[in-house]
Length: 195
Image (cartoon, rainbow, N blue to C red; front, side):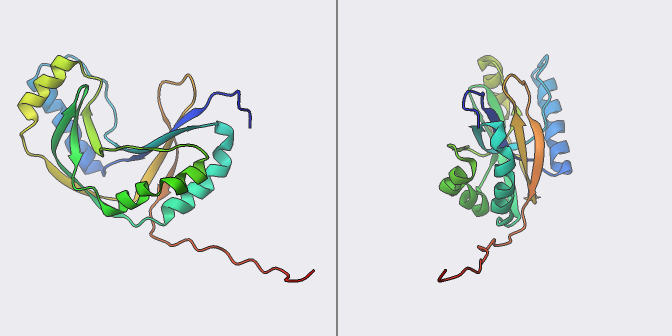
């Protein structure tokens, strides 16, 4: 591996089912027209689970191990409940956090062994409705929408793995990891006791 090479950025996402994504996009349109927002870049609704930096040359070794790791996770239901905001983002909250998602992200040491680098687990799971907002626009949206009710749920059956190469603006999908709930057992290898 060439250590002088810049590292790529990797991101693991959850995308809602189509009907939930469509509902979020309609919500985005309603808010945009209500607050007279001129423009905000379109992006696919998603939940960031974790991210890390690693040399792209390590990817071929990493992918099969990540596939095995995520195959052990059961499909789970994710509940979206109400709104939240921080300085430049207005979002829909994931509440409560599913235990499968907590178990997966609590295995940071296992993930570090697979990726050979530090893994950043996102502390607050949410779906951004708008991001990269200026402070005034974020406060305006929050004031009008913070106390309104939103609720939906969907079953997570796969995780999306993405990569952004150095000097690229956008992430590109590499693969999808299906959640199967299969326990991966160590393989027994017959060996000789005495040689």
